[in-house]
Length: 468
Ligand SMILES: Cc1cc2nc3c(=O)[nH]c(=O)nc-3n(C[C@H](O)[C@H](O)[C@H](O)COP(=O)(O)OP(=O)(O)OC[C@H]3O[C@@H](n4cnc5c(N)ncnc54)[C@H](O)[C@@H]3O)c2cc1C
Image (cartoon, rainbow, N blue to C red):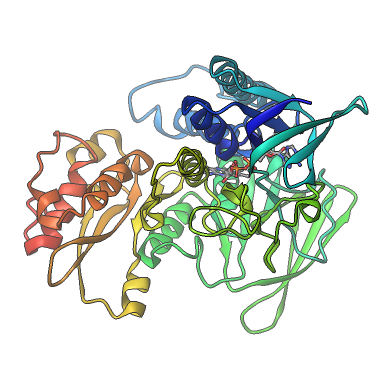
């Protein structure tokens, strides 16, 4: 029987990063993945393919709507070749997942393909597709089995027309009318893809705002911008049935006043969140406890109630984000190596890759108000930037929240072009406990979108932005 210092179950961004860090620190490491390709949700059916389609659809939209204004004439009609678009996306996924396989080989990590399940706290059975079962022994195990799309109890996903994000990444045609249930990150990103490609898109959301959980100012600005792009929003609507009739999908919901509203489309994307995934893992055999939401329970070291078993990523509490899973993978590896690693969960940035992009780190205004913190706000609109006008991406703003007494930055919230990349400045500043004045006094290259960060910091410091 093969023996390991560490076995990692699941090869998503949490699992494969944990495995690499364990190997770097000298531990004999195995990784177990039930699918044929490594990389988990993120690389196969999540972050990477969704960004590939967002980019392709953005190019199309630019060609149709903006090229002429830039002085670029395209003779003939610009058309979408959905088959090629999906094939390119798959090419990107294939390259990326192969890259993970390369990293496993480079770090001498043994890869087992098959479903991992606990035999007991130190032994894992691996059932591969051919019906073969192999058992390995591991001093430590890291559960990194991730999550799956969740649904509502009355919805029957047929995966053809009533679909999750996984199928939405593989459509063979452009929907005429896509009804998106859930105005969160995934629904908006994929909704925008198909809107750009020509579908009518209606978002039906239970809450009174989209991207709930992010700063209210960002929700409002994003909805304004997406409405300009002709996406439709139905907030405070409680979906009560989803039915398929031939090629039609009928969604019924109650609005704020309790009145029934019917939506008819040809596709319904159910994007109401994700659930932790432990099916088939046989956690009971190891004695590992789950909480009432099906997540593996962990302490601050990400250790379960069984001392040699750890859990990370989407399968434990906290934000379901790839970079959060990666940090946790690193933390467990370093903890096992006797180091004293630490994660500041307040500084895990959240990003929505619509265009305009939305990104945030730290506390929202709503959270600061609730906590009774005395704070000040500095906000700067993207449209005041030369860079934004040069590229005609003028929607959005940067907002910096700072402590009124100490000037320490407590939150950075932004919406606009390239914010997914810009937010790192906020993370860095907050990691070093910068004041708004520290950020304001740093030189920012001109002309860039980053100048909005400096200006917002100036506004927060002494209310003295230069360019408005
Ligand atoms: C459409 C979409 C877009 C997204 N976009 C982003 C984004 O832009 N940025 C971002 O940060 N996050 C994004 N996410 C979320 C991100 O994908 C997840 O947070 C991340 O993948 C979680 O990583 P993980 O390692 O915990 O689990 P996962 O990536 O889910 O990986 C778990 C792996 O474990 C395997 N597994 C499960 N059980 C077993 C078992 N018993 N034996 C063997 N293998 C098993 C699974 O097959 C899977 O490969 C997106 C998600 C979706 C669906």
